[in-house]
Length: 389
Picture 1 (cartoon, rainbow, N blue to C red):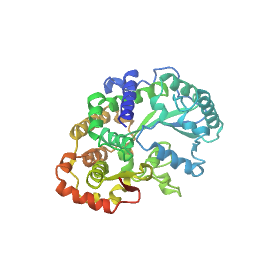
Picture 2 (picture 1 turned 135 degrees about the vertical axis):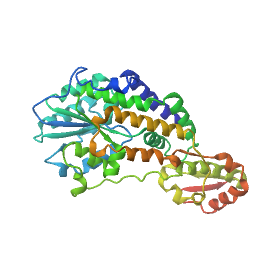
Picture 3 (picture 1 turned 120 degrees about the horizontal axis):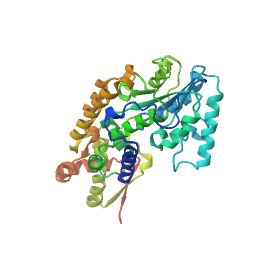
Picture 4 (picture 1 turned 60 degrees about the horizontal axis):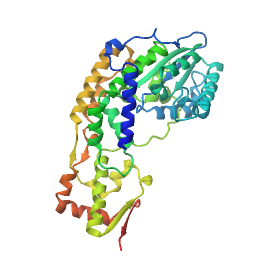
């Protein structure tokens, strides 16, 4: 898990250094005339290029638009394309052989250019992680079209916690919030900021100056993030809400306290072995993080928590959010530019980024021993206790 986190943060650091992401916000603005291959062309309508960023609901948006493609016509062309072409419209090492990537990209672009609909939508996060040369190839392919890039911005605190939860969605979890936070702030704390600045600069330099930023928190507060993207594509503020659209199934968000509850399960396993000579086992593939609190009697009790570096995370999130809005406010879509919504997310994230205080549990066996015994007598279906001979 931590290896995944380290690789992810290393990727952010590479992107930031490769594209000058560590320069100041003011010096990073503009840039539409730089770079080879500007995507701003004329003649066949507009292509809206949705680039993410990661952890801003891209998969949900793609599922929503794919499910309702017929509803979007004749106003908007959204074609997922063959071989998940939206994920390979620019080459991304390791996901598909280069030949298949190129063929997939070419077929998708041919469909777009052959369409008689004036507005087209491409959605792919791979643009955030590719070399400038690949963006130049995409720009040249789209040259007959006017290119409008769109990215969703999610504040540092909310992004960090969402990324953390993605890395720990199994029960084999060691309560590593502290390790994750320590790595993030001591080795890559500027990665999120630099990554966003780098992405803005790259999009304007290689796809053209027309760029819109959608405030993720503001879009959620206003309704639906998929509708926010369609608003930028000129389909109105609540197109999917006001039409008989089919909403995709979304996973329930991780409830507060689940991180600590997973840590408590590991102590329960130790208690079962030492006190009852019982080997506690579970199948992580059958367990959903969201139902842990409902499944375990232990979830009824208030858990002692420790929240490493939480205040530092929140302070950095406030600072960069304000800085980004001051410097790039003109790029934010006004309807969703809602700093109050973002700041409320930052303010209320305290219990979402906390570990179990293991010391308080282990040093109070007279309190937690009976609670563990009660849980062992009423194990949920996805847990089993095998007694040793």
